[in-house]
Image (cartoon, rainbow, N blue to C red; front, side, top):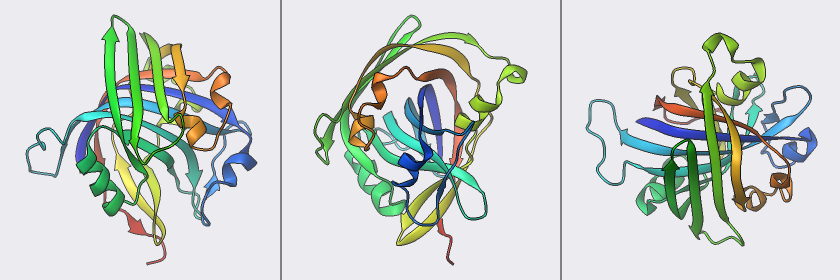
Length: 228
């Protein structure tokens, strides 16, 4: 699939590796930086989902998304993303992604509002229901970070070229895109229940590391089981 990820906000919290490892399926190991695992709340504007050589899917191919994620590696050491939830506004793509990729997509009422340098992402989960599964996440974007000044932690948190899922057993799908054009950012608003709904109660009371990106174009391959 081809798609564009635009107006992307990243908030990341360090977590004890054992707390994350306990949530992962067999075959995955939590990936750490500086001795910490990381939980991310990532919100963006998904645009122009399409197959190669085909036009973008009207209506169903563009929508907001907010996901909760962590960073992992398989037995070979290959890094990737493990998703706890992915909230979007279109029910049909939820069904397709759950069936095709076995990813935990959720159907939510969502919006993105922009006021000068403040971008606010809101989500209220409709299905499947979870107590307090809603989010109001606002970031104030700052100056761009020159490529040669992006540090190792920033690359660790954003330069992820694959995702893991379960297709009966562990599976991997490659993700290809240019390096993120990153901006400094600060948290201007956060009233979030999605991270807690993913099993990390109380984490968002702490100050996160925040970044912003105008976005990238992305190619996502089909997932393949690692035992075949």
